[in-house]
Length: 95
Image (cartoon, rainbow, N blue to C red; front, side):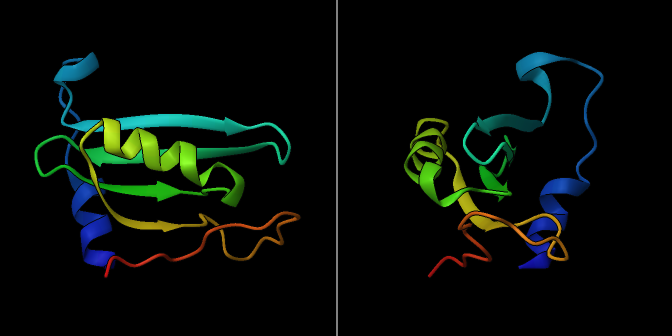
């Protein structure tokens, strides 16, 4: 699993901006918990990871992943050492 995350994150960003970059990055905000969630995807392989998802916004995140044609490999919290005041998805693994 970690290999897949590293493979997505390891790709170098191209010098071109916008949709020409090989990495897709979306930042989403959940106002009740003041949490930013990040979707990081590889445009070539269509693999993606979801960082710091919030349980209440899982339908929104799933819809975006579907709309972008991505395959979610991993979703989890970014800093496991921090206590969180709200329920969170953690370490989802594809079946």
